[in-house]
Image (cartoon, rainbow, N blue to C red; front, side):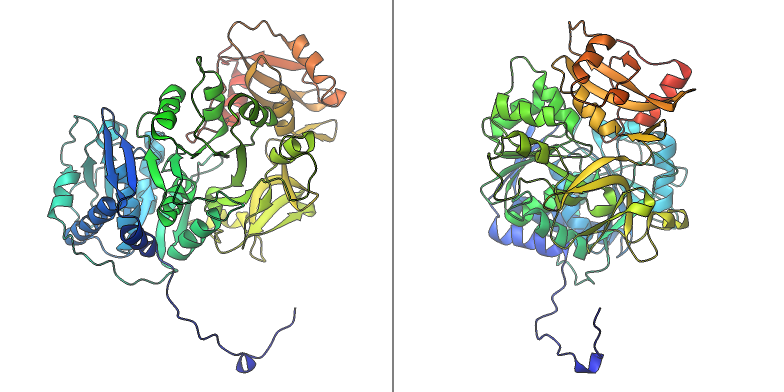
Length: 539
């Protein structure tokens, strides 16, 4: 690499305007004040606008300042995807505090650990979720070491000692000015799921949040526009809902927030009622849509963003053929803000987007978004590593996570990957989920995708089980369609022309449901434990 003496460099003469979440909020307020925001509560539909939401965010920031919240203080949320949650998304970072989204599906011990590790000072609770939040001995006012609770009214439920959200909004100054901040200061934080070891805190900067929104809105990424109606089904506690709330506000897109109504039937009705054009969710949500009878009306949808785990080719084909809706696979992690790559068929490929070649590409993880770099570390078993301005460089207050970062500054994703023609990333598996049979590797992801191509299979997860001869063999845990008589021999016969003979699972277990993590991914850790102790819920 060529280097130059600093004295010979000519400095650019451009303004050094910081990249701040505030700029997203203020632009939405100025340009899209009347653009609608639809939010479902437990019992109602609330209709508001960007102008109203940003105005309330100003009041909220003012009220928090009066309570004693200062730049750098952590403000936690424990809520559904809602208008009030969006107000917090805009208010908390814009006032210089740090938005900390808490996973509503975590166990009490994990919540206690995360709240204390993050040193949260305030927790905003949806009323319908209040019972899920454990009490803290240090609850009370905002004196040193105390945690204040503020209840958001989405149900007729109280919480002793909690302040009322609407009263707090009413007390705020509508003319509150968001302060100037350093773009590298913390804007938000989110903890990893903690499937191995303790959860780890990822801290996003204002700069990374704004850049991520710009990257997401690239035409060959998610490409949000003012004319779009966007439905973030992915929870707002999970990697900032994939950045969709900020990206939508930046573009001026209509936002539809589903609240607690997360079952496929309710989501299908919501999509039809609000004429959603883009929705984002993990594959299990879209698998659930396929099971609905009668099928949902998805005619308004122009594209579905799908990620969180590998998207089966069979799911992509089914959505094309049954609904005429393209699924766009995206890949990322909490540590990557999260969008890091997106799968689009490269220009010039024959056969359009519905050829066999195109389907194979669409089932891959795609090419990295602008500003993100990648490499494959063959010495680490083919691990995918990434770096860039939207990629974490460390975990919050956690020296044990240093092993996730290389000495030369790359994030070790833990994913084994291959690079296909046109720099397309294809994830082979998680390093911990590969099956090593007789010294050869079997990709659990690829085998799962082939199993789920069977018309009688709803879900399938493959894990390694011990084997005296081969060390490990794949065990397929399969959910059958209702009324199906599919058995292990029938499944192996179906697979015999689709995978190598030595990949065929010796053991097939038919189960009621594949256990899921708190963010909807297959929980193979639980499956392995259930296989080991014989507690599978067989179906």
